[in-house]
Image (cartoon, rainbow, N blue to C red; front, side, top):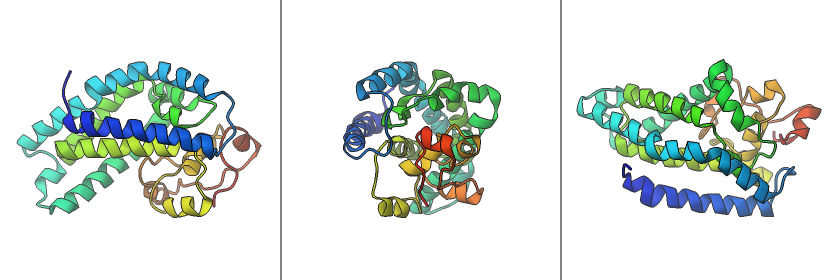
Length: 247
């Protein structure tokens, strides 16, 4: 099994602590009424996610990291070509990869073969932090190819790839959670990042709401493409976990 020290000794323990903290916060300050008990949701979603966890551990990072090392050694990719200061490279890495993931999320909805797998994530009736683990292993396999291509094109450094991946997973846990943040705080956060209310709208069964709010870390890409929606409308949206008012 390949060793990734930053992920193994910092990333995974930090993400586990964040998961437990969000479990408590969404229990103490719930945003939406849940259909099933917590234990039921935990067992259901983690059983579904076991193959995906195995793929993430064995291939989701190791393969793109190996490709990042290969690209770095051969001076391949945008960030390997540009003589940028270190801090600019860090910012550019986050922006480029998060924007690429915006398009990947869009593709997972719009391309039928990808949607067949991604739909497993959207069939959860109770959107909460456990939903962040509910991904079909087929989607994980396709995601390895996507991430490997992005890493090659952008010339992402191996270390920055791991840092981005940890941040990406932390944001995924956060915005899937059922934590009711104070609305004023959430509005401030949503000037920059994706928040639980914003992502809850994306999980609506109303198609025009599902086809919005594609972002993972930053909300700017939805603003850029005019797909940002801050108010779920209609009876169905209220019934399936999308909060009524956000704007």
